[in-house]
Length: 373
Image 1 (tube, rainbow, N blue to C red):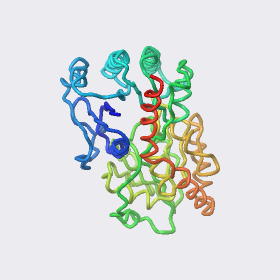
Image 2: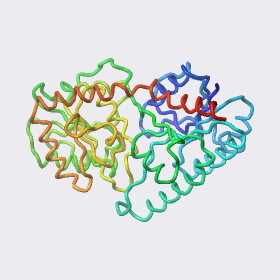
Image 3: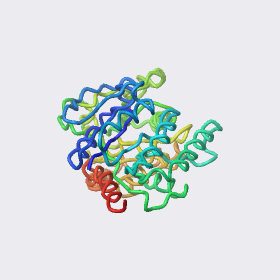
Image 4: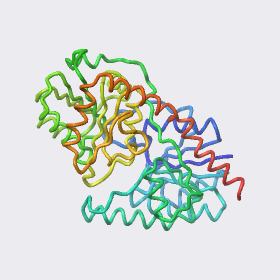
C-alpha cells in the first residue's frame, strides 16, 4: 500500500511520525507552500534525508497543480491538510471530493475542537462556524477522521460523523535528543534544594503566561523559580525581567529542550480560553516523558487525555485560573512525596504515546478501507 501525506509545515516534532509511518507503508510526504517550520524564531536543523519528502512551492501547491502532480504517482490513500486557513479549507474540500470519487482512502488528521459558546468574541464564532460547515460538507468524502483526543472525537460525533469513520490515535511529541548539554540550574542560579516551575510555548494571551507570572509574584516564594521558554517574550520581559525569581528566556534550541525538562520540578500550561484554545499542547507529552507532574487548564486539549487529577497532576478551571493556580502550585511544590509519585505516574502514562503507535492509526485506516472497498 502507498500513502500520500499532505502537510503545511515541516515541524520538527512531526518528522519522527513521518519516519514511523514510512517503516510501515510506502509513503510520500508533501510539504505545501514552501519550506516553513510553523513558528517564527524556532530553529530547525534536523535532517530528513531518510524520508521520502517533497517541498512544493506555492504555485505547485495550488489545487489544480497539486492534483495533476498527485495523479502522476500511484497511491492508495491520502492524508489531507487540516482546515485552519482559507487556503486549506478550499484545498481539502476539493481534494477530498476529487479523490473520494476515484476510490482512494481519504484521511483527515487535525487536533481541532471548538471552544464553548460565550467564551470568545464574534470573530471566533464566525471562524468556528465556517470550520464546522466545511467539516460537515466534507464528512461524506472523507473516509476516516484520524482523531487525537477525546475533545476532537466528541466534536466529530456532535457533527454527525459516525464512530465507524473515526480512528483514535495517539498524539505524540518526544524530545528525541536526550543529550543534556546545559546545566540549566547552575546557569540560572537555581539551587538544588529550590523548586523550578517550567513553561514551554509561545508567549501569547491565550497561553495564560501573564496569569502564571502574576500568580507567581503574588505567592512570593523565595525558594521557587519560574522559567519561561518560548518565542514572543519581548512584552513579558519588559514587565517581569528582574522581578523575583522569574527567568524569561525566549526561544530554546530544540536540542536543549531536554536540559530544561530534566532540570524542572513541575510543568505548567495554563491556557485561558482568550480568543482560542490549545488544540493539544505537545509540551505536556514531553514534560511527562521526563517524569514531571503537570498542571494544565481545561483549555488545553491534551489535559483531558493525559492528566488524571490527583494522579499525575491537576486540571485547572480556566474560568477561575489565578485562584486555582495558587492552590495547585502550592499543593504540588510543598509536598515532595506527592510530586515524586505524580512524576512517576506521568512517565508511566505517556509510555504508550510513541510515534510507532501514532503511525498505526493511519495504517489501520488504510487496511480497513482495503477490506471494505
